[in-house]
Image (cartoon, rainbow, N blue to C red; front, side, top):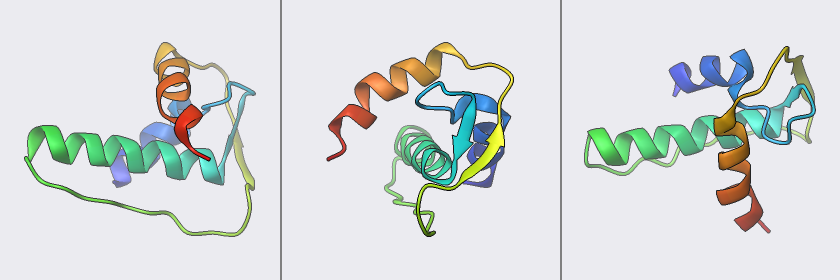
Length: 80
């Protein structure tokens, strides 16, 4: 989980591509990536969660990547 938090802070968690990583984006990114990794590599289930208050901006990014767009299109659009 920590690895994906760090990866997210490096820019991968900028899910809406506004050059700002929020607490919510970071939590969604790290949780999703951890669940995926555990399922594929450990053949198990893990449901990590990041708790906090509101959608607080955490860090400004320099660039985004293609994973961000794919993640947004296939994962975030399904969240109510």
